[in-house]
Image (cartoon, rainbow, N blue to C red; front, side, top):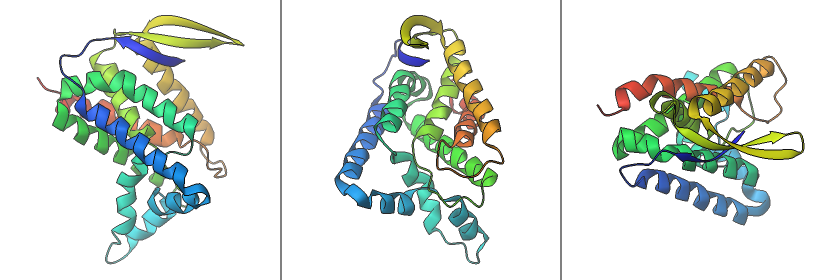
Length: 220
């Protein structure tokens, strides 16, 4: 299922959400300009679990890999990766920012992204491939939306074999199904050989972080 828009108006302009989408688009434009050098960019600014474990176990701690917890959130591996993430952020992020407030929203977003990478590193400590993308942080945003607006109507594209159907579904159904897919794919990926595909547990980590953090972060 792919969300197109929701029927959930906001009371404020989602400035932070616009900035986050703009930054991701700008960084991706820079990626396109690099050509074959993009792999070096990913190796330098993506989260590499093996390097992260090594940095944290050293004395003193090497802070350089820790920077990738932030930088990796603004890198994407291709058009599909970017568009999919930005679509979800566009549809659901504005309402979460509206409820949390601008300052709390950006902190919430970043903490969810860091939490997502942390779980990925813990479950794949020997991983040598870089993980990039805003998926973990956006997963936290989806969790916050699910908690605060479970009954909000979301216009959704539903693929049925070769046909595409649209329907308005409650956010509880759309986002609940999204999490179920992430969870079972995450279970299936445990113990498999590293392939450089989707970091399912990063999505799960960001979502769980969002579920826990939305309560202290949202405004009364």
